[in-house]
Amino acid sequence: MPDLDPVIHAQARLRITASLAALGEGESIAFPRLQELLDMTAGNLSTHLRKLEEADYVRVAKTYEGRVPVTFLELTRTGRRAFEDYTESLRQLIGEGP
Amino acid sequence: MSQASASQPPAEGDLPLSAAAALAVLTEQQRTVSRRLGGQIWIITGAWGIAWLFGFLAIWLMDSTSLGIVVPTWLGWTIFATLFAAAIVVSAVLGARSGRGIRSNSANAFTGTVYGVTWAVSMVFLSVLGAALLSRGMSAELADLFYPSVYALVVGILYLAAAAIWRVVEMIVAGAFFVVLASVAPFFGHPTNFLVFAVAGGAMFFTFAIILAVRGRAVGSRA
View 1 (cartoon, chains in turn yellow, cyan):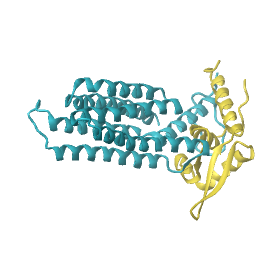
View 2: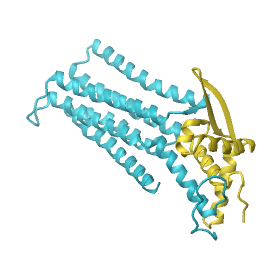
View 3: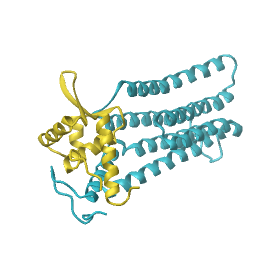
View 4: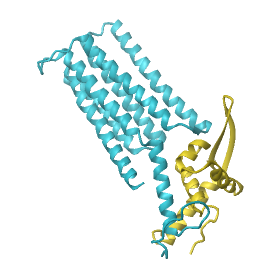
């Protein structure tokens, strides 16, 4: 039985990671838009993003649009690979995988 | 095998999930994201279908008496220009809305910008080419065959380029269709070539719009 990555395997972080993985490689998303796609509170989203960032799964880039600070988020290569491995493990666990 | 395929996902936060519930959450979330980011493409495609069908039909009716209706020249061109302008506006507005808050790295942004500018530049210079040919004696009747075909040819080739860049297999079908349509339409002569563009081009866009809408609906109903 494969072990499930504990960083991803929690509802909130799973949804965050899945959303970021649905973007194309090299695409990042602004914090408010991600919050909208997830329907999570800003505080809750920040907390889980911090854990993903600590694991080096998510890259956080702070920038300015005019004078407004905007935070952009994207999966790192490590994060994308971890998500693919995680999905593969899930499929194996429920008997869909190879 | 999962012991927990019947269990419900927990409400929120940090609680661990069963494998089946996790896979359900994952699939659901990715569907939501792709629907919100690309769910309105069918409307854009439909707007182009309306422009092609009714725009080219209006031009055809300026010169054809087959239906017993004669559309005045000013009205035909007004309908054509309005519908194509409307399709451009719909594409720009919905495209910008779905891409809100999404940023590309510089390599992707470069590809997107070059591709977008190529559209605009091609459309300008095919008009210049037409003007050059007219200045060297191309007849008005030949111009009526030339302009829509060269326009459709550019559309087809740019769709094929999009298929190659973003690896969208359906775009190969659309691109090839417009290349063939552009090349074959002049054989029908003027003004029937406009009818061919209206019906075949319109049908192509509507087919794609329906496929995209049905796909989006299927995703939506499971969400």
